[in-house]
Length: 466
Image 1: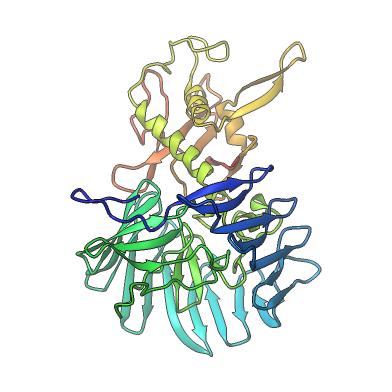
Image 2: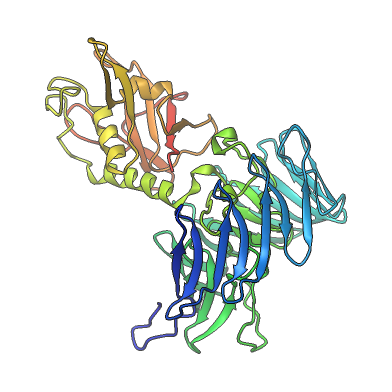
């Protein structure tokens, strides 16, 4: 419910949840109603198989999956069969429309020349074409964010906050086109042309469902939950019928529709709502699952992926943010000093950088625990040391590639940094002037940020346990 300081406004999206025995979301029911708005069905692997009208039970869309997770058919007004080669999850065709790929799995064409895409050497889309004509060009910053779209002399520049949220689009002179207002990870407001404020109501995942004009207390934009479950339904840009369309590109969390490409830009990748799949293979490889093109485990109304990576689940991001926040809250603490005693693993007169990292991660529910055998050959669990973290083999944590962006909540580690030390480790936290830095425990204090000086080639780990 969104309210103004002076008077209550109508809540245009208000729903309750129903769950099945396995914990899957099975129904969304408007507040005050006993009949669900929609019903959802799943297979034994938790993948969405059907979206039904809650009151009539009529199938809106049905989905079939093969044994290794890719969608194999969509059933709505017409059946769309998905065709795959025997040796990969690259979609060969859907409903007879052929798809082409480059050697690394980037989709280069859908329907011959109907839609074509060009990529740079890092696998990022740089150009979209329709019927052979260029419709848009794209550029990215060092964080992997799409920051410029241009065609001819027309440029649109995009800004993001430190968490990767879209903040706004601006023309070449810096004048705002649209800007978003965020409350943590939820968009709550929209500024159109710099000064026209609208309120946003999201669903349970954070997908936009209603945009409200607070002056008139009417919905100015809606995206129905009864639409196609993987997002292949256009929003209603003029639900109040006043003849003024509100064009807004936000879709699933982290996604923005791009009319030029026909895809949803999803931070590190591009998503095709027509197929419910990404058009590029997962940048983190098989760590995201065997089907490297699938979206949110083929369960789009239960899960989401704000980064186009496996790590984009809500719980995962919350834990990584909690790790970073805890580390920053403990700057200046003497509890991890060399002369302090914390445990049998970390007695007095020992370095405690890994104790600090262990506590930061454990406090967030993302432990860095390793299992070893002691001198009596008994199996014990304990915090990973800096050297063990630097090796990169920690359960539920993955080692980032050399060119992957470091983000708050990651762990940096390297080995053998000085006498009587197996290595050093610290938490990646936001930098004061943008970007990221590190926060670690030293001889007396925790911090200050940025003094850890991890050399090139140091290990960086990211939690992937949720």
